Image (cartoon, rainbow, N blue to C red; front, side, top):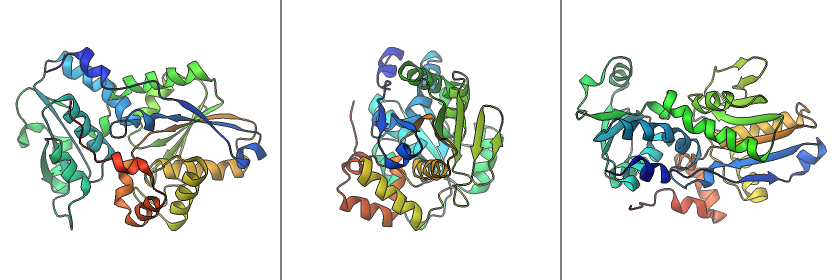
Length: 309
């Protein structure tokens, strides 16, 4: 097993802050930057890399023999967790919500190719697992549990580092990010004093105080829901900026940001948008995937590539 220093070095930080040019931003006298955390790594980049940072520290500190986690059949977290485990040579297993799939998602094959063991749980078993204990499942002794989505207090450690990186480059009026477990948002909120706008992938998640606002206005009715209009926006954004977005998180976020800008809600502001990665989710949308391949989107070629340490 590698040392903490060795493992932490495998999680790159210092992603670029890219200024985007667009007539929409110019019209509203805005400056918009994108924090390109998707460029940290094609597989375990984005906010999943940030959230793994603290869990790697806990893993090494506890001298564990392996680790495990859980999530859905298209989970960005499971994808990043498997890729990193393979590259870092950490024994791992995952528990997937659902056991009656019409077909195997590419994620299942990828996890196994990375050397991981998959256990499929019914929704009832999955909820029992999350709410009770690990004694119900075949988990080896002395293995570390990484929460769903990489959440928890350790998951916030790398997100605080992300916020510190942003503030070293620019002091914005607002930071925008896609919202799932809210771990990234909470880590950032610990550091910054500016406004934070969260775009929820989940229906029914709304929150607002003096500093933070979370909206589900652009969730399209629920997690993983999509539309032709959203696909068209993702395609146009790629053509205009050569930046790939996914339909679950970052696509909805940027789609919502553009609508709020057009409504004049952020006139004159300096805004930092966090690209949280998660591009493997595109493979769950064959129609969009086919159109992106037509653009020769080279980013898609590396999503399921197996790396060896």
